[in-house]
Image (cartoon, rainbow, N blue to C red; front, top):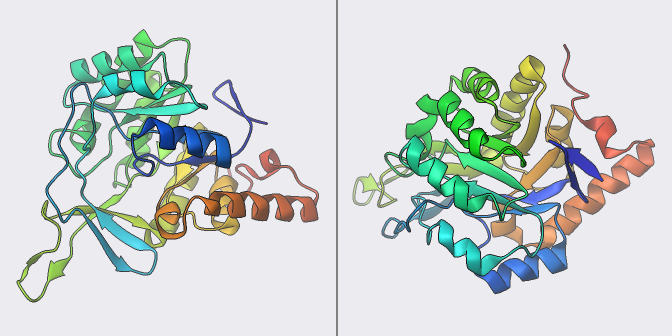
Length: 291
């Protein structure tokens, strides 16, 4: 069992946000067959948001993607249809503190952890646009959710260390690190961006070292509860994030590339390594961070 922010989880792996479609039957299937520690839902806003027009996803290198779905989602009230098939991390967002609070009021009855997305780079006015209010958002959401953990999801920006401090100062129970990194690719036949939104969030193997560095720096500074995400494709990637401070490891792009079975493979690889070394998973958390 892994304990994070006073929540007991039966495993160290979670499915990252934006990977599993908001289809109740499919969510239940993932929970029952793969048995992750938790499943993180796509970010939900107060009212539904239409995704950007295609193309919204581009694979530009082996195991590296760029996407600009734009927080497309059916709205937070869709949680009524999903229920609680397993421990859910409910990711929420909004274009104002007031909207985020309203979403949190609805989401709190469904999520084991409420994760506030202040980092998506793909919808103006949402996500990273709200990062400047990190402390205020953390405080406002925690004020109405005092019986469940509130995590703030931050992106790989230059000021992430400072934003992490503001989130914790505001009352957040933990942090989700990291989100995608904003990038762009140009089609040289038309000399225009490949993605309809122009820019997109880079995910996959290419951001893994960035995730390692940011999680390391944040853990060294504050030693908070961390859900670590960023280019996890195998057991070594997972243990690397744990070694710099992540208690729960999120898998995202690898599922797009290899299917849900990659979670089983990562879990087995980690457990085999730990058994060989005579270690438990908690023994690894933060081990590579020098104070």
